Amino acid sequence: MRQFCLVFILFCGVTLGWAGDDRRQKIILDTDMVELFDDGIAMMMLAKAPDIELLGVTVVAGNTWVSEGTAYAIRQLEAIGVTDVPVLQGVRLPLAPNRKENIKEEIRLFGYGEGYLGSFAYEEPTSWKDVYVSRYKQEPTIEPADMHAVNFMIEQVKRYPHEVTVLAIGPCCNLAMAVRMAPEIVPLIKRVVYMGGAFTVPGNTTPAAEFNWWYDPEAAQIALRTPFKEQIVVGLDVCDRIELRKERYDRIIGLLKADKLQAMSHDNFLQTTFQERPDTVWHIWDIVAAALCMDSSILKREMICHVDINTQQGLSYGQSLAFPYNPPIGTQPVRIVMEVDEERLWRLIEKYCRLF
View (cartoon, one colour):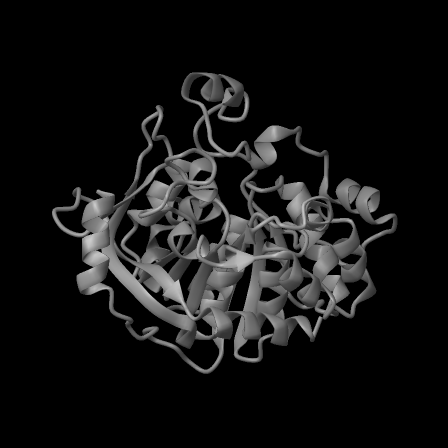
């Protein structure tokens, strides 16, 4: 499979236009939010972009539990003075029954790669407010909206037919539930842009699977097999090329003006990692997907394949699969980003970080 896809890239990997761009894009950011790198930076960039109308931030479990992601999203929006973007709590658990409870047995039977389990590795906090107060030692000034994230996604797509981009940078649980609950929204969604998958490179949670889609393969398959007008995937194929080293990290963090963000930067996993191991090579993921929505000229090379995901429990559970020809019935054509202009990407990130 990977050999076929590589051949397809060489002969068919041309850059296409970002179909249907308009002056002010309406985006729903669907995210398993963390502090700063990299969901946080992605959210704040979108919130500050003049050509983007960030309709809302829908939080899903993945990197963090929904309660944590909600607290982190609210704190970072507070930090940059954005109070009119609603934050909504979404699906708390993967669609597969008892996945969290069975994760240790799954690992014992099938192994996993780099050891990253996201929220599966620890217990779920009781509430977003408990997380906020415990983490930041004060009361929040913003509350999450009193609506479920899935209902919000459905409502916004119906309110703005053919205008909304769903930027899914976490597991696909919210999106999958939305199209199951309200299939009439499918032709009304302008496009879906994912951060997920690994087609020509190994996974980063297991050798076969990238984390976002491994966290809930069933939800990813529902989303990917839905006949949206356009689906664009930013996976490890492009993200593994983009290195974040200590020098670059220090430079970007040094641009942040808000005291709340500076405090985050000094009490942060990446900060600790770079202090302990200065030669560490990190990557960025969600920011790449957000940046492509903000400036499509960053895109340099892509391939178009039908895409599916392995939902069979086993060594390849969660593996993303690309079919340049003879695809399985029910799969949809997807644009897979293979290369971006890294210098333009970093300039865009630094430009917006100066605004925070």
